[in-house]
Length: 132
Image (tube, rainbow, N blue to C red; front, side, top):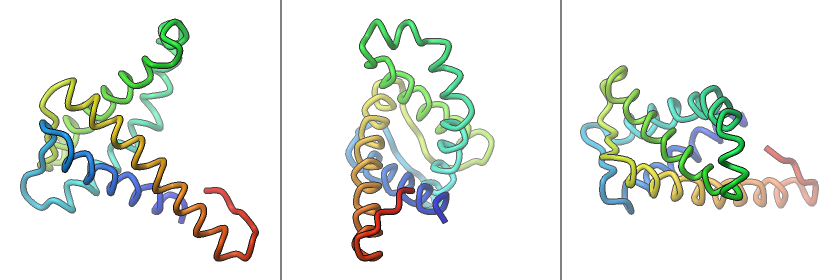
C-alpha cells in the first residue's frame, strides 16, 4: 500500500511540475504518461540516484547539499528520456534547466503531499501516528 501511495504522490507531483515549468510537456494520454514516468522515476531514484550520491559525495559536501538538486534534475531528465524511448510515452523534458526546476517542484509537492497523507493517517487512527 505504501508503494502505491508513493507512486500516486509522485505522479501528482509530476502533474504540477508539467503545469508550472515551461519546458516540461505531456503529449498523448496524459495520465498514462504521468503514471509511467512516476514509476520510472521511482526506479531510477531507487537504484541510480544512490550511486550518484556516493560518487559525488565530496561535491555534495562542498556545496552544502545543494548539488543534490542537480542530481534530482538529472534523474528527472533521465526518467523522461527512458519513458519516451523505451515506453513511447509522451513526457518530455526539454533540457537541464526545465529538469532542474521540475525536480525542485516534484520534491516540494511530494513532501507536502506526503505530510498531508501522514497527517490524515494520524487523525484517522485516533492519535496513533503511522509513518509511510
